[in-house]
Image 1: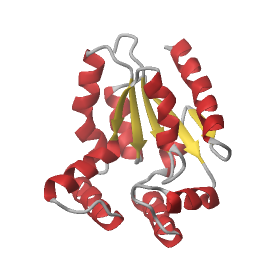
Image 2: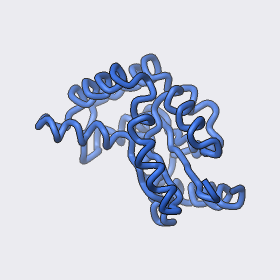
Image 3: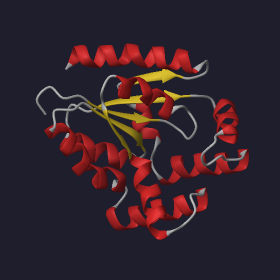
Image 4: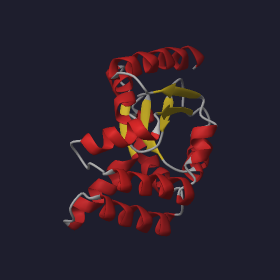
Length: 186
């Protein structure tokens, strides 16, 4: 992996993972979004991009490839980026099993957890332009991600945690500090 940096962002729905990704992409990181695999499959099947269909596809993939499905399906993209000597940002690490698979393939992987309180996240999710969720849907998704996806592990042992309770600018400034630290450590 000769000096290439691979970072995975993890956090609960609506915590600001995509906003936290912006400073990475601005620094030239190749952007790989695990959730895009599900969206691509929905488009392929001609299904609407809605939470129930997304969950169905995620569950199908995990039944077929195991709990590390999104990581397994993304490894070729990550490897291609590394071969092009690109730093990589993975947006949307979901499960403990995905983390284990990624660390096996990319031992120097860094994990950045983004945290926002449920009250903030639910407010933001309701206002989201793409795939908005009501409070009940958001609570259901939280519960499913914690209980069924083993999402707590990657959040708990992240190399870095950024609190997203303020403005987008404050979040991005905090992430820029993390990027500088990661780059120094490589």
